[in-house]
Image (cartoon, rainbow, N blue to C red; front, side, top):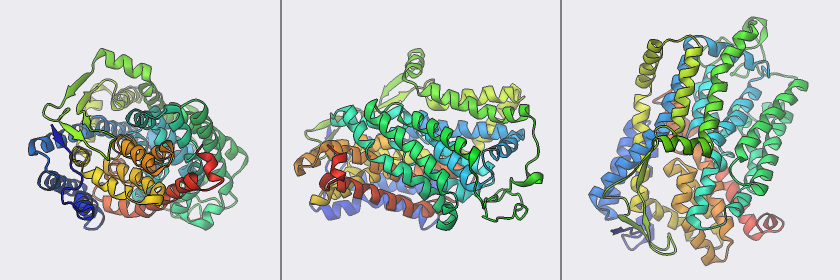
Length: 557
């Protein structure tokens, strides 16, 4: 048994500075030096192992096992999702069906701002609620790049949109995990998060369009933006407070998509934006990979109903399978057929978390769940195979396309494996807990900085669930010591964490892979960095108000 040490130098300032080295190496390599993502990830992993072994005293074999465990988790389930989503997308592009899909989306609105709103925010929230783990960014970024959005816009805007739904993603998994590690009531946590995030469910759609085209052009389409946000926020609040965390995103996204589509039947902007560049001239844009005009009679050819149904069919099949694979009953049934839980010998129950991160010493489990059947990526693969057969591919054609896709995403899979390896090394060595403790020593400002702990956790691990597991206990212990409602601070960990999702290296690699813009992760990181920090700060200020200020305090009974 090895016990974590959070202040190896006897100085929290120095220990925190050393603990930050892997993060600085990784994000600095991507954002400042513009290294290829897999190179930056390998350097970050080397830094994480060095810090964990040399400075924090973790036994080298344990550190190596933690890295291997993280890499395996990076490939299954996360890499497995990305590989199969890109496979499905490649199938539709190869046969020309994505061009028809692109044209048919113009039937909802030929305005690029509203297409972005529908796909990245509304549809993305559905995939987040059903699957999570990178699925929404992979799908929406691929769809946006197919619609002609630039790779940077498709990547960055998909990441910004994938925020408010994250806390209830994968059928409420982050909240369920938070309740498990803190011992707090599940419904109280669900309700508290549901009294924080609806404000941002209204704000984020406006923020998304401003990030795309600026304030002036956002104001031209404020009514549908408001409809999309409010119609998502109200069900989000109601379901989370009066039912539980399981179906929040599913219900809210379906209601939002329906309300937006119905509203756009009776309202269209007076000054539509028909090109990604923002030109009002329907014939000004030249169709290309980064600027496709889908308006006008010449740019929107007539397609038969059968052709449109065929173009939408793969994505509807994907939605159905993702939803089915996300339900506990189907997942349990598939796990009953075949699933292996493999303890990582030498790491499982060999590491001990220590106070003040937890109330009392707690042994850390390390069990790799090799659930190849129930993994979301397997459902996506089955959806892609069925769709491919319906699109006219034979078995040989499917195999060739899959091999091509595997070659396309090879570096992305390596990068994601390294990213998760870094996260698991810092988690099991206690390095990330040291960073969290530094923010916990902030006195009455803790509600603000406690929110940043959740943001930091997601930025490090790439998962709101992992952040809640990592820092949920710390949030409860610190809140009780300071006389703050522990439910409020545990919920703040999850709500603040969602804003770190757009800045974590794993999500950025997912986006760059989906848009086939691998090697430009630094540009994506710089695009989203301000938005991530600014939105996390706003969540922190809300939590600070809930802790101390009337009437916001009424939201945290």
